[in-house]
Length: 121
View (cartoon, rainbow, N blue to C red):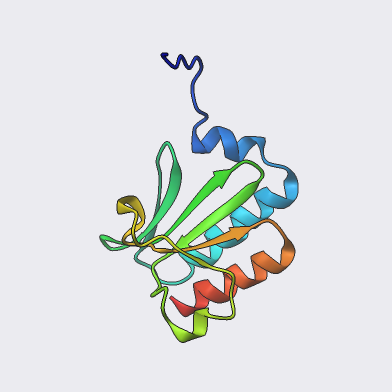
């Protein structure tokens, strides 16, 4: 049996353009908070996600999956201050080893939590 897949995946820019107004505003708030951390923080948009680097070191990634945003941060997943947040540890995946803490953003509360976690960076 062979699996035949026709079609292409959407790019990050296409997914961002297709978001509703609330999610697009959340992406812009997160982007502004990350860029306000330091003068050396730069945004790089690739096909899959937006990566924020401080110099050469990645500090965050934003990706869009379905109707929810995923924020990956360069925090220690075992840190005690992260225990009260519903974060997921993705340090075992190679593409997220630099930014192992993942937080899904699908509500206003999740957005407020994301902004608090960005302040911990």
